[in-house]
Length: 255
Image 1 (cartoon, helix red, strand yellow):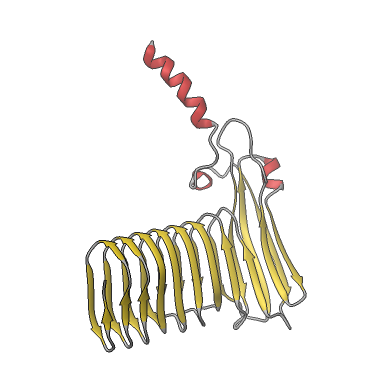
Image 2: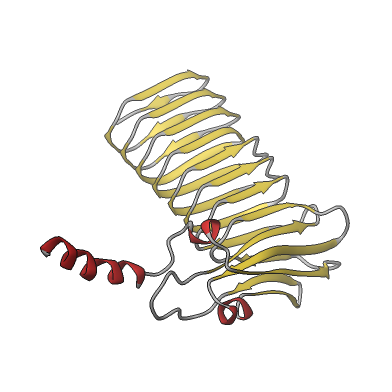
């Protein structure tokens, strides 16, 4: 009887919790397509505000920005409130995902939108995302602010700053400088003009094929591997983990 009573107390509490990150993958009870597009002639910047769900940003075949995705929600009411807005404010194009502000009650409550954004070549993009994996491929992303989920960035056209709370970060063949601030998760950079890690709390760091300098200001835990660097390598502070540095044309500074 005691065991049964314990289950009766715990189960409703668990069901009342907010959405786990993978809930919409398991059961997309209510779904609908969302899309929008806009001409970017004369625009100087794109701002993407994504929420829960995966995000992909890729090159557009024309001068028009287009965004599309599938909204998933636990109720029709939440689905009706999960919207995609594409608009222009002066020379800034904004892509904004709207989700219900509050989700209350019992049961698994969720609202998410998996989003793909096609951006014309050359337009700088600022991305803000709350949860879900992110893929950036062949575009000019200037900044990324992400709460959770893995980030994969390939063939970025210019300098990029990535501020991430949790999840792995992988950057490949970046044409410009890469600056990363990360709380948890592995960091991998394979090809960049330069790399600057301002802070890394936990997770391994692997950096290879950098044309100029590599600077790691503060690392708390995890192994660090740096190789094939055309400039200098500086590691200013390191908590724990092995450090391996090889094939550096400039100077190497370790704590």
